[in-house]
Length: 479
Ligand code: ADP
Image 1 (tube, rainbow, N blue to C red):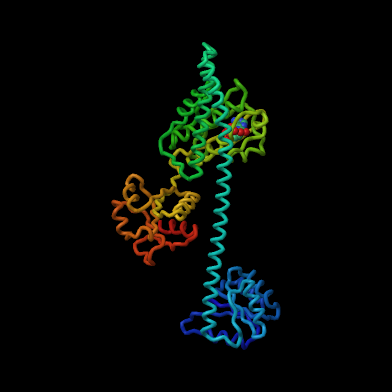
Image 2 (image 1 turned 90 degrees about the horizontal axis):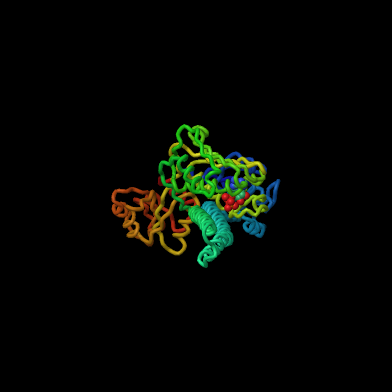
């Protein structure tokens, strides 16, 4: 233990040093006679604890304490005070010192015990502050998520209602026989377009909810971008406005066909929606940066004010000119597009000029860069601990499945394999070797929570109360 003695009285300092002399070398002491000297020493090296005299030539009482604290914020401090200033010593404890000792009453035992306790107390204090901070972070995330959910409900209720009203209106007119021949055909076209709009909206909403829950899965298929883009363009209302051309050296990328369809459906639809009827839209598949294929979708539409571009990738963001022109939209698509592209290991960029048009570019890697987050099985149960673990892991990029007990895990493991299994040992008392045996040869990391203090056979083990950071560290260290 490294002890910094801050004491200007040579006799007092010598006594403390003598009491800490230890044949096994358990204590290493250094002396500072002024606060300024202590500050310099603390800058040079780390100490485990400081003993601080309350009256020093360059600082007195609580002022001395604050200066030492500032020099080393997490250093435990034990005050050495004279008989006559015990009140001051109490003040120092209230101001953050861990303990005090009265000169003249210091024995080897009291001194050593005070130093040990001071270190322990400071550690507890730090863990407690970290827990409070973590709780505050969690509270902020819950509030943010709740707000997001409310926004989503408001926006979606409004956006679903528009097309539904149109569909209902036209369906009623057809039913009543008010529309015939060409009019009926036009009405059917309008209905189809609105159903299509609702489908995109529903797909984007589902994707958003999966993204929020960290549950978005990306399949690994081979996708021919040119074929996909032609198919999407042909299915729009105005296929004749698109030209799809390829100059790239190979247009097949690894990816999830349905997710990539969602990406390009959104971008092609936007190109139509934000440009005037009949203006052409070019879709070009080119060689991008080394190892990437790039798809440029260029329209000659209303464009986007440059300073608003970065914000458009957030949920529900819309550009001022689109809102002013009363073009209907949710501001959901680009957020989903960007997330999906990034999940494929790709990039989305935009170049745009107001009233001249926009180019949205999607770069996708030619070979396997699909992000595959580790899968974790949580066998914890309980009203709060299980959901807390799942929430923390998902926010840190893990995929999570929860199981109510080990029987359920064992029954489903073959179909739902995981890279790690977290088990509440109090609720599921089982030997790790037995858990492994029942997993039929699979060998995920096993992390135990709680239980008796015997982590034999577990890859990592945590006490019942732990910080999110401890859990994440256990997962990475066990890997
Ligand atoms: P939505 O089109 O439903 O509003 P998006 O998330 O797809 O939502 O787009 C967000 C915003 O970005 C749009 O509201 C619009 O302001 C702008 N935007 C997207 N694509 C284009 C485009 N091709 N031309 C001009 N503005 C665009």
